Length: 424
Image 1 (cartoon, rainbow, N blue to C red):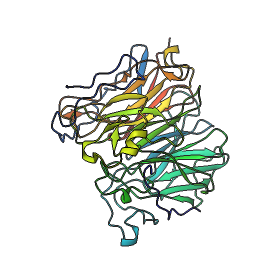
Image 2: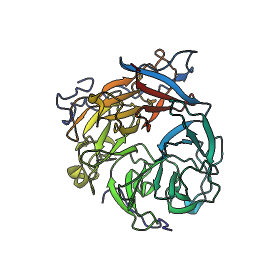
Image 3: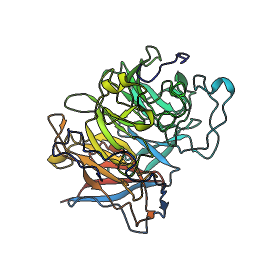
Image 4: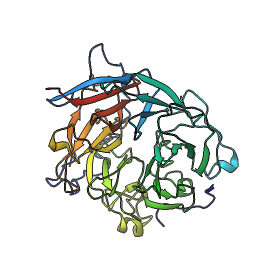
C-alpha cells in the first residue's frame, strides 16, 4: 500500500463569445465585469408525469428512483449497473497531524449513504427488476473501475479494492486500501473519480482542489487539482496532469484513445468567468490552476506569482459554459443512437451557485469527428430548470447503458433517468 507522505506541489466586454471553431478558445470578458453572486437553487422535485426533455426522436423514462444522492454510475461487463450513493457533508475537524491531508483520515460521519447499489435489468426491458445493496461502509464513494476480478472504488480519502466475481449481487469482503488521498475539498471537491486503462495496468484518479483559487496556500493543495496515475497495487504514484481545479468526469475518447476530463473552473470572477471545460489530458500537462485560466490568462488574484507556470499552461479543448458545474462525461460508444451521436461526448451539468442566472442544469452534447470536437456543445437533455429560482432536479453522471441508452443521475431527487430512441 502506498502512503502519500511526499509533497507534490501543483506544477513545479460582456458574455463569453464562442469561437466558430470549437477547438479555439472563447473570447473572455475582463475579470470582475459583473459582481460575484451567490444564488442557490430551490429544488422542488418533478411533478407527477413530468420528465426531462430530450430532442425529437428520443423518449425519457424513469429508470430507477428511491436512492440517497445517486452521484455516479458504472456499468459492469455483464450488464449490471453500479450506483455510488454519497453526498457533501460538513467538513470534519482533522487531527493536527492530518491537516495537510497526507495521513489517512477517519471516516466522515453524517448523512451520506456511503454505499454502492447494484441494479440488474435481466429481461432487458429498459427497467431494472433486481436491486441489491452491493457495498457498504464506504467513505463518500464516487468512481469505480473493474480490472479482471478486482473492483476498485474511489472514496474521498483513497482508493480501495475488493474481490469481485461476475454475477454476484453483494460483496461482503473487507476492502483493501491501495492508495491514501487528501480528504474532502472546496465545496463539492470531495469527489474522487477512477478510470482504468485498456489493459488494466494503470488507474487514473481525479482529485479536486482544497480551495477556490489557492487562497489556503499551495501546501494545502498537495496532490490536489490533479489527475494521478498509479499501478493497481498502489505503487508507481505520479502526477499525470496538474492545474485542473476540479476534474471529475473522465473517459477514453474511443477513436484516439486519449484521456478526456470534465473540469469545474474557479468562482468569484463574475457571471461569465471562468468557463468550465472538457479537454483531452496531456501526460505532464499543466492546465493553469490557480495561476491562470483557459491557458495563459492570468488570474488577477495570483498575478505575478508564477509566470513560469503561466507560460506553460495548456488551453483546454472545449468551453462548456461558466458556472455550469460540468461533472459527468462519457463518449457515446453504443449503437442505438443516430449516427450524429456516435463517438460524441455527453456532459452532465449539475449547475453552480455563483451566477446571477442559472446555467447548466442540463446534459449537453459535443459532436466529435475523427476523434476531435467538430462543433459547439448543444443541448441534449433539458427541462431541469422550473423558473428563475427553482429547479426540478440536477443532473450529474452520464453513462451509456449496455443496451445503448443514456442513463443520467439526478442526485437531488434521487432518480436515474433513461434516454433512448423512440421505438418505431
